[in-house]
Length: 217
Image (cartoon, rainbow, N blue to C red; front, side):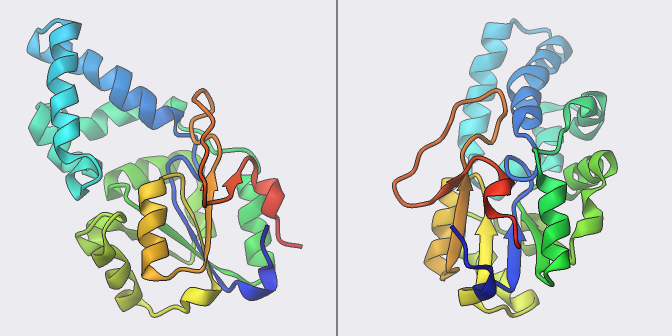
C-alpha cells in the first residue's frame, strides 16, 4: 500500500484515526444532549431538534470543532463534561506500535488535527500520545478547518514540506479531498473510525483496517 522509501513526513489526524471515534460520537450524540436537556429542562425530543439545527449550522467549519464556541452556544462547560466521560477515550489498535516504528525509521511525525487545544490536552493526558509527535498543529492555531485550502496553505507556511514525500491519514473524506487538492501525494483513510460504528467505503482513498497493514519495515 505504501513505499516508505518515498515518504519523509507523516501527518496524522487524531479523532477517528489515532483515537477511537466512539468517544466523540458518544459525547456529542448522547452525553451532551442528556446534559443539555437536564440543564435547560427540556424533553429529549425538543433537545434533539435544537441540537440537530445547531450542529448542522456549523458542520465542517472551525466552530464545529471549537470547545469555546459550544460552551457559549449551549451554556454548558464542554471541557468539564469531556473530563467527566474521559474514561471512554481510547487509542485505536496498533497505533503506538505504528508511531514507534515511524520514529525508528526516521520519519517526521506531526499531529494535524481539527481538535480544539482543550480537547487535545484532555486526550493527551489520557493517552500519552503526545510523546510521539515532533509537532502538533491544530486548525484553531491556523484559524481555518482542515476542510479549507487556507488551512493547508497556513500549514505549509509554518514549516515548508515536500508534498510528494508526505503521507496524510485521516478518517474524514472531506478533509482528505482538501489535502488532495492541495497536492499531498499519499493519502489514506480509516475503515472503521468508531469501533462500534459502520465500516466506510470510498472509490478513491485506500481504507486502513489496521495500522499493521502499513507498518514501516
